[in-house]
Image (tube, rainbow, N blue to C red):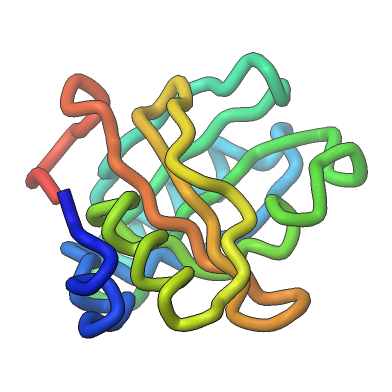
Length: 147
């Protein structure tokens, strides 16, 4: 557990273990084409792949030496909350530590540590329209090297 004074001394990257993964949103009908092309052309490897029923979406992360992506496949983009639509980058890491460091630095915390079907997440606003998400993936979902 990170104390308040420790969080004040540390910056957000101190809590990241892997990333960034660039967040993108793609219609569900294009999922298999995107996945096959990104893996085939970019040398990608699936990190995790799960369905988030609450928002009727599939979420997959692909790690590549040419750019990591976290894709939310949805047909309901407009219905997503702004803090989700404005997420631009994601990192594996210590959610509670990152949130404490963000608060200590005066950043706006949009989502505290929250359990999800994929593990857990938290979101921090860097500026209006650009949010980062810190994630912890449930170990059983990881398909390759652990974060």
